[in-house]
Length: 448
Image (cartoon, rainbow, N blue to C red; front, side, top):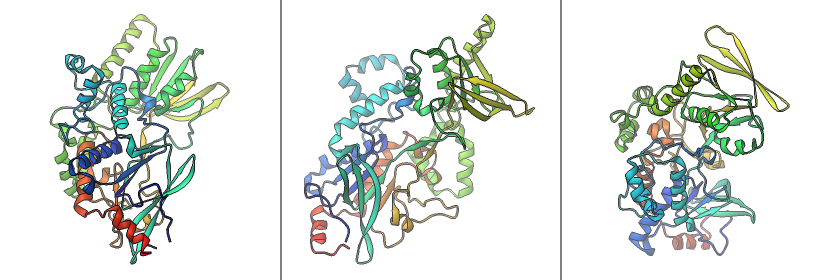
């Protein structure tokens, strides 16, 4: 018989959330607003577990002048509930900056400001989350041969505890991606740790940085390091001739509309692939045109003045790195001639993207009951629920890792507010037993 919850916790949660990044913060807000509307008797019981000691979202990339690439209206709530007290505008009002922001005439806040908004919103629902708690496993609980509940094992400083739920929502985010054979260290950084690592260089005078990558993060890293270390050379390495601008024009942005998720989900596989090809330049390996122009302007100015610190090694790729003492040698190979250039640098920064965490990695035996498509990918229903065998009655929802089924917005903020509303609607439509009903079932010994 599976373990039961501690006596001071709800015996069965309607929903347990794994991770508490922006997506699951939005989920907690949707639940809070729903419960406030329907009252205690119809409330959805939920709790979230986050392994970080406090809320944090890409902290290593909160460069002081970096702006968001989505409108502030695509916050945690507005597209789902424009009247919500959790909106970015309500945040601004609480901080005394609403008028100042309006006068700024911008749809795109500073990234550090939007992170502060996330922290503000997360704090308003912190009764639903346990920080410093890592989910280490999930086990099925059978009743009459069917998986009725899921037991979630959580590790915290107090030890291991088991929490039971009828549904899961997984929002574990992205993992930094480094080239094969490269391990993050003192001289080899992933861009996600930029600001923390830079602090370790305090009091030193770096002579050269090498930044690998052609996307927004790579360009931001180049600009930041060039400004932060005015005596250092910054070398950008990418396989293109130059940075490609992001297509954020009005028609192209329709790929992020809620309706586009329906279109993508219903489309045949060949159409899905074409849509990705057509509109990849709205998000992948592209850079805001203003930043491209700023970097080019700076580079040209340095050429005129004869003080070149910005170097662009284009149509090339990094083919080797070798650490030795307090330096690292980067080997850059031309894609045209094959000629190798060796650069002795203080640091190599890899702005090489992220990978989605394995959505089934924590599910143990439950993962064997999840269905996959012909390419081995997890099958996901329109309501973001993993498709499972008929004997699985509980729902396992994904916030991320659904790009192959739901399109580009899978790991982006654009549809977060809409997505959590759809997940909540799915939970309600499928029906939720009260914790007291589940408690009686366990007390009767019908769970095993």
